[in-house]
Amino acid sequence: MMVCVCNATYCDYFRLPERVVGNKVLVYTSSQSGLRFSKSEHTFINYGGPQHDNDGSVVLTIDSRKKYQSILGFGGAITDAVVLNYYNMTGPTKSAFLRSYYSELGINYNMIRIPMASCDFSTHVYSYDDHDNDFNLTHFELTVEDTHHKIAMIHEILNLTREDIKVYASPWSAPGWMKSTDSMIGGPLINEPNYFKTWANYFVKFLKAYESYGIKIWGITAQNEPEDGYNTKYPFQSMHFTPETGADFVLNYLCPLLKSNGFLPELAVMILDDNRPFIRKWADQILGKLNGSTECVKGIALHWYLNFISPKIQSLVHLDYPNYFILSSEACTGSLPWENNVKLGDWSRGEKYGRDIMQGLTNWLSGWTDWNIMLNLNGGPNWVGNFVDSPVIFNVAKDEFYKQPMFYFLGHFSKFIPRGSVRIDVEMSNNTKSKFLAIAFETDHNYSIVILNTHNEAVNCKVVNADKSVDLTLEGRSIKSIIWPKLEKEYSQIRYNSIN
Image (cartoon, rainbow, N blue to C red; front, top):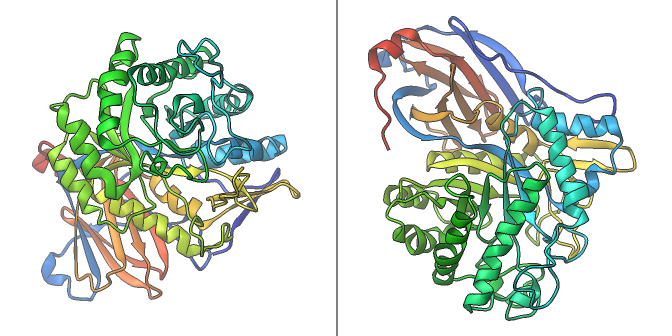
């Protein structure tokens, strides 16, 4: 699959119908062979029963009676690097870029993550208060990277879409003077009450500052990758919390101050914002002390970089702490030393996204947020040279951007699983193909299923819903999103309450 080249005069768009009618089944396919949301129409027929499932097809049986988590949404991060690339575009190319992500003609993103002050995908290191010992934060002020860049771009998105965009923010580090290293690079916050109080107040100042520009922040994570800051020589902005000091900060300083300033219970505070191996100890230290209360902490944020740990750990944590959502808050390819930073048109990187999203959603993820939504041909800018890949790559010399397979994989979820969708059960039989995954959802008007085939060979597949079925062929190295209408008979006879 080659990239789609978008510019001031062309970009690929498509719109989904609000509802599907009758026995119609709509199938949208992207494949390594070059299909990009290619549409085909099929028809449900009467299902003959399992005794007829002997043709070698993989059979996917939908059971809408078994309901799991609801979906918060899908989106990506708007960093300084994203905005610098964006403002190097001409007006028509900017419009095509934003529509591709944040409109019903594109892939219907409805979430945005932003860094609080600088991160590695900035051009320099900065905080919102670099005045030593300013414990009252008298000098706290947003920078031009916020006021003229990120905020302006977010407003353009809000003016473009009908979606309710959930914006959430993550800090990479407190100002250096608050830390034991006297630097935003590595090390912990000074473990004294005055510093913890000031850092909590920094969050309040940030939330109020964005509100003054007309942007209400939906959520915050308490710290980006708190485990990284243990290394005082970490190459870019980071700050260390242990689960114990993180619990102290969140429960005894951040939550009380957010409450006294009127941000609770609406604001969604998320813990961890780090990799899967750390989820258990952070959940136990913080959620274990809350007795199910979601007045302040509402969820767990996860990164994907150490996903050698089985995603089933998410299900185990969910069983212990069912009141709290789990959100994937950061992912990117091209970050490992042996990888090319940008690898245009690489299908396998899209498959990595697809597999991670499906395995995560099967284990109680409520949404998935990509890292930078656009980078340049080098995978930046990035002040420390930590270049990576992105679903969209911008070529400033030609004023054009390239939609990679990762972009289309993300769209097979974000466009077909709107906010409020509920995961339902899908059972798979005759699956001799271990690289074949499926996940199903109930939306307001339709059912949807996403099917991934990572084998080179085509696979025959039968989707069964109640007494109806449809036969499909899944091309080798392909992903399909399929939607069809809810069946009135099914609804009136077998619907019952959700299960956890």
